[in-house]
Image (cartoon, rainbow, N blue to C red; front, top):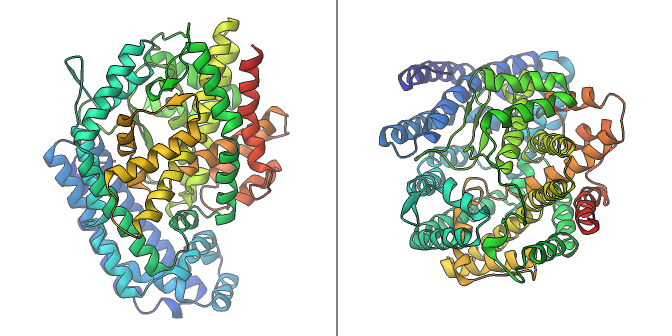
Amino acid sequence: MYASPRAAEKDVAVLKKLAAGFSKKYEGKVEKLSGDALGMAVGEYEKISTLSQRIGAYAFLYFCTDMLNEKTSAFYQNISERLNEIFSGLLFFTLAINKIGDAELAKKFKSSAKLEKYRPWIRDLRVSKPHQLSDDLEKFDLEKSTTASAGWVRLFDETHAALKYDFRGEALSNAEIFDKLSHADRSVRKDAAASVSKVLGENIRVFTLVTNILAKDKATEDKWRKYKKPISSRNLSNLVEDEVVESLLASVKKSYSRLSHRYYKIKGELLGLVPMEFYDRNAPLPSADDEYIPYEKAVDITLKAYHDFSPRIAEIGKKFFDNNWIDVPPKTGKESGAFSHPASVDAHPYILLNYLGKTRDVMTLAHELGHGVHQYLARDQGTLLSDTPLTLAETASVFGEQLVFRYMLEQEKNAKKKKLMIAGKIEDMLNTVVRQVAFCELERGVHEARKNSELSSEEIGKIWMQAQKESLGPAFTFRDDYKYYWSYIPHFIHSPFYVYAYAFGDCLVNSLYAVYLDGMPDFEAKYINMLKSGGSLRHKELLKPFGLDASKPDFWQKGLNIIDNFISQIENL
């Protein structure tokens, strides 16, 4: 995107000039514009937004690869503040669009093809209309964000990036120490867990403070914006109804016993650990192949699996490897975990990994490449229509995981190894569905309790332990030092209530994949069109060509039954 930070900073000056010209041209006049004039104004706003996203994406990605470098951190913060200041001056535009009456807006759409192009963006913009504050308050909220909520998020990220975990005399990063929790040697898992508990415990006051501040900040904003529940703003941004999300959460919780409780009972018996400790949750099963998978082999597996489904999708996926759009190895100061960032529509997505050579790392590659392909295809919608709600953003990623898993399963001829692969897939799905819903339950508990008073680390730990016990079941004992583990999960800090989107996406993809296996005509073309749609269609419209409807009571059960069937296969084997 840019050759250097200096090049990005030059574009900030260009952006500032464009934004000033836009404000001068349109401020105070939006509601009186004709349909064509408003369509042209939205087009100009989109061009400004594209340049802003390009600059912001570069600064963020630059920061994520070297978070402990003070110059890198300062560059990211400075860019964030300057972009925030520029868009504070443009806030009038979206607020004014929401002030146009429904009947008047309908006339403008009818009279202008230029405006009609942006109907989905305006439709989604107006869902926040009932929660919109005065212009001055909206501007104040935006301008303070970089030194308020975003500042606390930055503190959380930089603190975690700087942490070192002592493991038998060696200082390990986040990614490296958590990898030890899936080691075949139980003593390794035990020592790694003790190190994680110790380090998180030593820093728990900082993480508790950050959590309290952000939860209170959210509660204050929710009150002013008149959201019914702490989760409601996330549902609104995901463009999904409260009732649909509640149905998902209730369905998964109701299935705890027949899914996670049942599987982990089997796992404990196979491991000879009854009950298991919390650090045994990701332990490999007996005889599990812990063979190191070179990155080059992981790439080959992923692309072959993608190609068997769709040569077009594999062709797009290959671009990420051919053009070095992926940051692969773990290193000190690098963001832990993995993600695919859409960057800007006039560039291309970037993927960040921390590849360690395990089977789950291959699945992570498949997952993030799915995101990348989705983002690449959706960019043709333009900046304002390419962004996909979180609930649908996980579709291509989880589908990609399914493709790679099924491919690897078909390639494996050893019956015992097949069983182990199925067990591994069950665990991945339980982590994606059950574990994420349990995370959501923690968030609901914390945000509800924080309305009344500041929470101690002990109180948050208690809510965490309760959610974990309910979701994982009696196969585990939960030692007291597990109470700190909530504090390493960045989603709670970055995007409150993001986590249920994983369960939404997994259940949705399970149902979608079942349709694919049933041989629906033109499935590939329909699937690619769905990804190309970006954020221009709602979930009902996207799923309709596949005969699926997430608002139906039995929709979630269909997805959960896939996990149930896998567990039955393990039992029969």
